[in-house]
Structures are given as C-alpha cells and as structure tokens.
Image 1 (tube, one colour):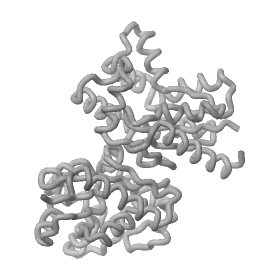
Image 2 (cartoon, chains in turn cyan, red):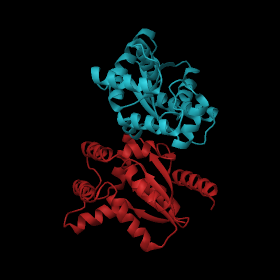
Image 3 (cartoon, each protein chain N blue to C red):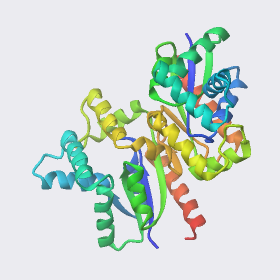
Image 4 (tube, rainbow over the protein chains, first blue to last red):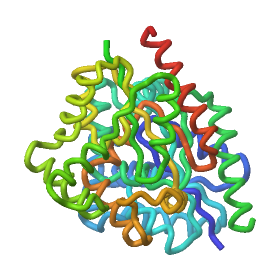
Length: 185
Length: 185
C-alpha cells in the first residue's frame, strides 16, 4: 500500500527542509512546484514567480483543481516507491486526489509571514519574491487557490517559527514515525 | 499600550484552553463566540450551531466582515484591561481591526479534524455539533468566512494534536512570554 506524507505550508515556511528529513529515511520526494516549473519551461516561459503562478492557474483552469496532483501521481507511478513525501500541497482538492490512491498524512509546516520572508531571502530561488510586496502578492495567490483550508485541516502541524533545520527535521520524523506505527508500518 | 493575543483555530482545536492559561497570568479574556451567542439570544433565537452560524453571517452582512471584532473592541474598552486575549478570531479582517488599536500577536491552535471532533464531543456546548456531518458543515462555515487564511498567516502556531491541556497551556505561556519580551514588556 502506498503511503504519502503530504506537506503543505505557506511559501518559505520550511516544507522542503521537512521533506528532506524524510528523504534521509528512505522516502521518495516529489515536489509539486517542480511539476509546475517544468510545465512553465515546457511552455517556453522563464520559471519566475509571475510565470509559475500564471501556469499554475492555467493548469487548474484547463484540467481542474487537481491538475498538479494528477501529474504528481503519474510521477509517483514511475518511481515505484511505496513511501512518498509530497512537497507543496496547495488545496484540499489535491489531498483528495492522493487519498484515492494512498494512505495519506497531511502535515502543515508553519511560520510567521516575517520569518517566511527572511527564510525566502536566504533561499533566493529563481521564483522567490524580491520585495515584501511581491511576497504578500505570492501569499495572496497561494491563499486564492485554497492553501489556507489545507493548512487548517492538516492532521499534524509542525511549527518552524523558532526551530533550527535540525529541530524541524526531528519533529517531522517523530510525527511521521508515530503515524506509521498507528497505520501499521 | 493595549496588547492583544488573538487566538484563531478551527472548532474544537483548543482555543479556550490556551486562552484560559493566559487568564491565569492576569490576561482578560474576550470570547468572540460569546458576542455572537449574546446577539443570537438578543434576536430571540436559541444559540445552537445553526442559529449562531446564521447570526454570524447576518452580522457580517449588516455591518461588514469586522462586525464581531468591532463589538469585541467595545467590550475591551469597558474592561479597561491592557492585556487582552481574544478567543476565536475567524478572519484577517478581524485581526486588522485589532491591529489598529493594539499590538497584536496572532496565534493559531491546531489539531486534526478527527481530534477536534473528539474534543468537541467531550465539551458538549449547546452549539457544538452532534454528528460528524454537522461537524464538517461547521468547519465549512468557518472556512467560508476566511479562518483558513488567519490560520495560515498566524505568527505563532501551537499544536494541540498530542498535547495535554497542561502542555498546551505551557506552550502558549512560553510563546506569549517570548513575544512580550520582544515588544518590551
């Protein structure tokens, strides 16, 4: 039976740090944002914040709210992995897609807007916001597709407000370990 | 200067347990739901889940998204307290109302739907859901007024997924103590 740890959280909250902690335990990581960035490039566009946002909206318009989740499921099928961590859940519609195919634990990684902006500046990925206005705009876009509901309905929440990367890793590993015991590892 | 700890979280997550921990330290608690329940009674209706939900919607329709927050500010003014914990933030519009009058820390208390349903059954307040269907419907109503965004944009998150009431109390007291140090207690 396929197990999925589905990680949600606002931009910069620490989703990837949490996901990578599970990768070190043998989980396979699938990044929802990578699917969107790949699709953005495929359409001949630079994968910056604006274009990836637009392509995400287009994908949802063309193929429905679960479009990105469907593409992820294809990617998972190819890996043949039975323990997968999905990095970057943006809506409950996506979670429902995964629940049809797997036992799913929905985990939210949280941090304040101020801290997330700092963490994003440290990261400096191509699609990361350069100014606070761009950051607020990106938050608004994510909230617009329903990420707030996914965070509110998460089964586990891990705070990255005061955590070091090591502490965040320890917490997610504990939470997932407990869940695996409960569902019968 | 007025300080407000604004507590948000889905129904049953443990907001009141967290708020009461601050009351024991001398904070004054104002419950947003009490304002709605009082208004429901004032309109001659039984304050059950359905009626309080309807009155909340009516209040927002009549006086805008911040209607309940405005009523709370009135209540705070009467108490003359300078450290207030607001129990039951439902939208960022409400947070903005408080930010105009106070230094605000927005805290989310989180727990899974399954755990929240159990906690609500234990509590058994008049407006608490009796069945899982009613529970899901109440979640939907809260998410409809934007509580997901408030949870996603919280400055601090405290998980009540595995905590005892004592542990939850300790965590919120720590978080608020740290914040008071930072803003200059």
